[in-house]
Length: 196
Figure (tube, rainbow, N blue to C red):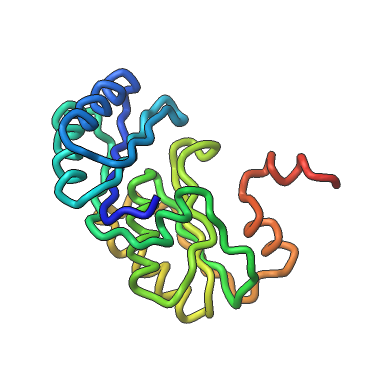
């Protein structure tokens, strides 16, 4: 799923989100379209493809969405680790530190992930979007403490509205038991369904 450009739109209306997604795929030759409902009653549309096509498609979505667009992003040269993490790829090896950025919207989380990974020598452990988070997003960075601190600060600094950030945390020397939990799955249900 590695593409040169990626965009995501978060709609407050499911009906308008479906209409906008249809307009987006009709407007330009995008290679990836992933769309669906998330809590609390919102609709996300993720697209990927060439920079020009994604830009055209995104414009159509914003136009149809109007005031139902809660947030959106356009990343013309998205980092490959962001694409991997959005697709469920994980970094299983423990490192020196863990950084967490918690955002109020999914687009904000993706933007923070992309900026942090481009600006510091870190890896993305996870980029978790909306489901089971009440529409929020979380980004987990790993690396040495100084680099994780830099990634978290860079990720937060690109968010133009301060209310998009719920919290940011850097944890040096994360305990091995906690690393096992966050590197495997951050959803509590996934953890408790394993043998206790």
